[in-house]
Length: 338
Image (cartoon, rainbow, N blue to C red; front, side, top):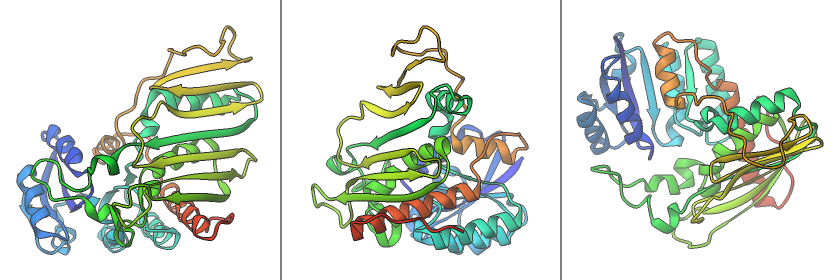
């Protein structure tokens, strides 16, 4: 049985991860939990049935612990990831990997040099509609892709979801402080959009963006739109933020031989390479893969599963940083590379 620990439990997804770990209690022993706020560590430890420790080094120095789950404030990722890699422990890091390019690429170098298993929380790749789009793009089913759009939005700021925790947890307000999170609403939800677009389309040459505040409730952006130029010549756009009440269309991919889009979770397609398609729903989808977090748990248990590389995670932090630089300067910005 593998022994794991939590290094930070501040992220809003932590309760979900704890639930997933507890559901697989016959496979894992959770030995300890640490957080920058002692009260949060105690709450998580009580839910996990483990000890709460005051110093995260006690976890990294414990030879019995095989892997750690980092759900801390993003500003602590560099310190925690480098120390975890040096300790030779496998690591899941909640997204985004870094505050920007410099710390993200430093973490990538540490992870790769240590040779530990790495995963981050981009879960959309496991969804059947995106797996199908990936297969079509690799096969050239839609021809040369000219443009691609992705939207990832919710009403978090309107509903004030950051102001109070789930169950006994404290608030999640640190996620609205760019000094701790590295971004606001555009970067928080746009990280998932960016992962899908780069997974489908590859490297990004340049970006521009506009971010804004609607409610002015938090000292950060609440929503935004970004434009990307991919290395393959395609144009991409991202809409992301916390002030939308619905997300009717998540993605649209347009190519010289077809178009596909997802509306209300269903995939629609028309392509000269798919006889009989006329823009209607496509239901012959691949099976869903487990959630990104469950894939990490599978991997540390020895299963051969698809994971997100540290380089991919770092590239996405670099592009997101470029988006914010572009918004601040009203210009196009080339993302930093490793």
